[in-house]
Structure formats: structure tokens, C-alpha cells
Image 1 (cartoon, chains in turn brown, yellow):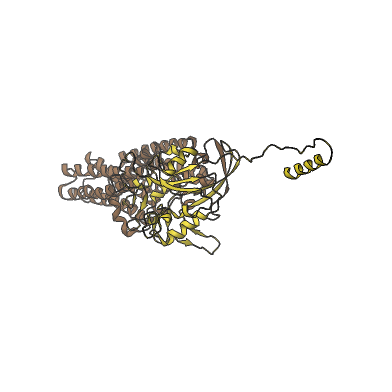
Image 2 (cartoon, rainbow over the protein chains, first blue to last red):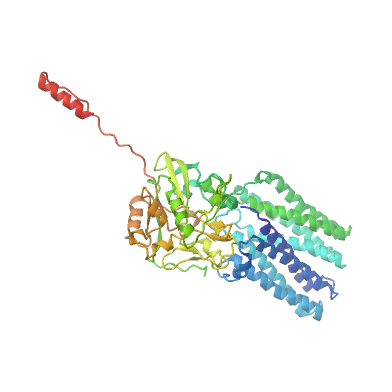
Length: 311
Length: 247
């Protein structure tokens, strides 16, 4: 499948934003955050800025972005619609969280409840994004039991990296957040390795013979309907740079997960915490973008069978 | 509304039956479809770089050719026209966030309302048959309409109220009708020829059926050699007639 910039940005940036929002809710409820009036609204704004940037980026690939509001209507059947509704609904508890923090104080019950609600809504939004891909039956690289938990784990991991940075910059105690980010980096790595093992070993969804209704026969393409590109080949037959996949996977392992995890560990033990946190976030973001690129570029669609590709 | 209603038994299911035995791969269906729909309800079907080095464009029919071996039809070339199958469980409809994609309850035709489509392309990702194509000019998704603007068109003579691809096929490899009615001509044809669904394992329950190619048999009669019985003029004459008629 073609990895378009807008969906890469959408899935990674909302992961960072809603992940941070979730951890702000949890750490706020356990009094793990600086209690100053300015910290909460600023950190929540930081989280919403990431999420909003991702949501705005997602409208860039639409053919008719001016009609995007129509996407809120079909939440009964469509995960894309549910994602849109959940994303908008998340702003309500998130803004309430910031407002209560400012007016009622960080420790007020209202602040803590709003924080947990905002975090839960953010994760629900991430879950809806994951389900858009996980529900697509023609793409076996997405339609499996790994996609949903992976998206949630990666969101929690990237959110923990951002929380560590926010605490380092805001003058809070970063030890528990840094240890959390370090541990989640390793959990994410394990999840990604399990995913790659699954997709590399799972059987193809269908064969060309089944796609043309000739079970029991072997078929191979003779003449194509057209000898240049078309929409289907551009969108579903993406093959550019897949040959670099093995190298890119190594980059993901190190850059997205291992290195930020080690940097977070160093930050937890007080080694230039702000610098370590910043580098961990930048490395993690770059690594997760490569990871997401592979998630799209390595996914194959059964419609490509008709053109002689594997599915 | 993109939620699917439960189809009732005996409901009309309009669709195509495509005969892979007689399809000659001439692309007449694709061209005729392009011609009708370019000016029809979902037109235009744009072409990009049509006279340049990399022509590209939007078509509702794509005709592939495959070499097959083994199976019931033996080794042969199979021409395979690919278009929307108007599935009973069309995931392209349920994933649509705007309600632009819908399946008509009255006849099962899957359509796109181009006036509310946002062009998110998710429906094309949800279709395992690659039936939907994106109009880069208008920024919306387009697809086979089963020529909904022909089959109910009362300004056309009744004999022409069939999809353009069916009307154009020179080898009568395409048939149109109600596959929900077990006694319709198309249902009987499917029954007689063992028509199949494409990729039934994915669970989309396509309406269209494909008739498998038959094993090619070249008929050759027994060869009777001219014989001569007896001698004399009449035997020679009979032998000559026999030889002439045996050619």
C-alpha cells in the first residue's frame, strides 16, 4: 500500500499527542506532575497541538477536504467516521482538564476526573485509527490481532517520551516517567518484532487462481489490461524501496525503540535529563515515522494479485 | 447510510454473469463502458496524459489475460474482464465515513454519491477486487454503476436497457439479470455452467458470477479410407465417386 505523508503524520502525531494526554491524566490523578497552575494547561496544550497537527495532516490526502465535516455522520459502520467523532469529542474533556487545572487546582477532584476522561478518550481515538486498518479484510498485514494493540502500545510509548520531556522542561520529577518510557520502549520493540514475525510467516489471503475463479488451476499473467500505471497499481501495488525493508527494520529497532529506551534510562538516573529526553523524543519520532512507513509500504493488497503481485 | 440492511430471500440482486469460456479479450466492454459512463450520470471518466508517454485514466472495466494450467479447463489462455461485483457484503460501503457509498436495497447496486464523497479512498482499500478508481480531477471515487442510467432508462428502447458492456460484447460473453431470482435466465445459466464467485474466502458474497472456461475439444470424426471393391468400369466409377466425396 502506498505510504502517503498525510497518514504517516496522522498516525504518528496523534499517537504522541493522545499518548501524552493519557499519561497526563494518569500522572495527574496520582499527583505525579508539578502542581503549578501553568504546568497543566501548557502540557495539555502541547498534547493537543501534536494531536491536532496529525488530524489536520490527515485532511491533506482528501480529494475534497472542504467536505471533511461529512465524515462525522457514519459512525455506526465506519471506523474512519468513529475516529473523527472520537477525535472531536476528546477536545471536550481535554479542554475541561486544562480549565479545571487552572481554576480549581491540580489536585482538585474535577481536574483528576477530567484528566482521566481526556486520556481515555484520546486512547479511544487511537484505537479507532488502528481499527481503520485492522478492519480492512483485503490487507493481511493490517487485518490481524497485532494492529490494535500495537497502535495503543506505540501511542503510550511515544506519549511517555513526551511526558518525560515535558517534565524535564517543566522542572518536575522525571524519574518515574523516564523509567516508564524506557520500559514501554522495550514493550513496543517486542510488539513490533512479534508483528514482523507474524506478517512474514502468515499465509497469503488468496491466490490468483481463486481471484479469477479457477480453483485447482495455476494461473500466470499473460497480458495486462494496460501497460502503464493506473490508480490500483499506484495505490495497492506500491513497490518502491521495499527492497530496503530489511535495513529499514534495523533502523526502526534502534532508532524508534532501543536508543530512546536507553536515553530514557540515562535520564531516569539523572544524566542530563532534559538533553536526553529531547534527543529521545526526536529519535523516537523519526524512528516511529520509519516504522509507520514500513507498516504501509510492506502491506500488500489482494487486488494486486490481478497484476501478478503476491498478496 | 452505510450500514447494510439484511437482504431478504428473493430480493432482487442485479448483476452480471461473465463467461470466461467465450470472452475473446477484445476490450469492447471496457471501451463501451468508458464511452457511456463518460457522458453518463457518473461522468466524466477522465484520462491523464492520454497522448503522452504515460497514459493513465479511469476505467470501470479492466480486461486481463492469463495463462492457466491444470484444473478443469486444461492449459489455455483465459481472458478475464474485471469490474465491480456488486457484493452482498460490500466492505467498500461500510467503511465509507460520509455515506457517499451505498448499496441500493431495491436491486443491490452499489453506488457512490459523488456530491458528498470526500475522496478519502478508504473504500478502494476495502475492495479486494480493485473495482473502484479515483477521479483525480474531481477528487472523488467512482465505480461501475451497472449502468443504472441505462437499465431503468425509459427513453431507450426496451432491448437496450442493459449495461453498456453487455450490449457491446461481440461474443455474448456478458449476461445481465436478476441473480436473486433462481428462475431467471442468468441464474439458470450459472446453474448449468457451474458459475463461481471470485475469492469467496474473503466473505464479500459477490453478486456477479464467472462461468469457468470449458476444456477445449477439437472435434475430429472417424476417418474412412476410400476402398475399391471389384473390377470393371462401374467399380472404378464408384471408387472415383467415393474418393471425391471423401475429401
